[in-house]
Image (cartoon, rainbow, N blue to C red; front, side, top):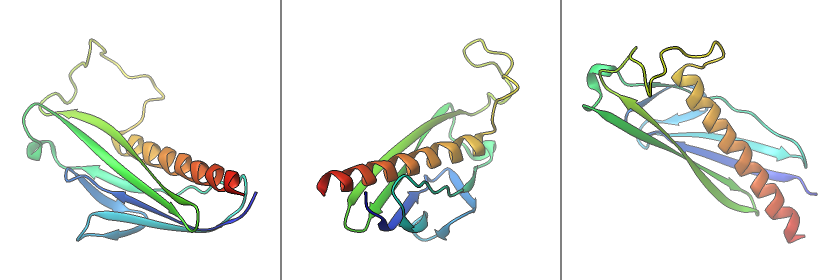
Length: 137
């Protein structure tokens, strides 16, 4: 059970996603970066990135699936990565998908879903690094 001194989280945004806020955004590489320091055993950190999907008129025809990749590197503990994929269908906004005509009241907007997936991967990556470091000692 040791403190992780430095964790760097890098989220490479896909081309059809635009960064809106959160983290340090590098427009030349499309990478959003966070640094977390002095992460204590059992402690979690939450960071939020807000993104937007490009306008429907700019989407390719048909269904487009987008994969988002997050890399986590911990000082002296290693590296991990994960991805999340979601699909968008041009011209189908407001139409039922798989026969579903209404969303549950607890449904989320697309940007919130992307943020949730990114944060889940950040937390899982941090947990993996923590466990890997604990087993080394």
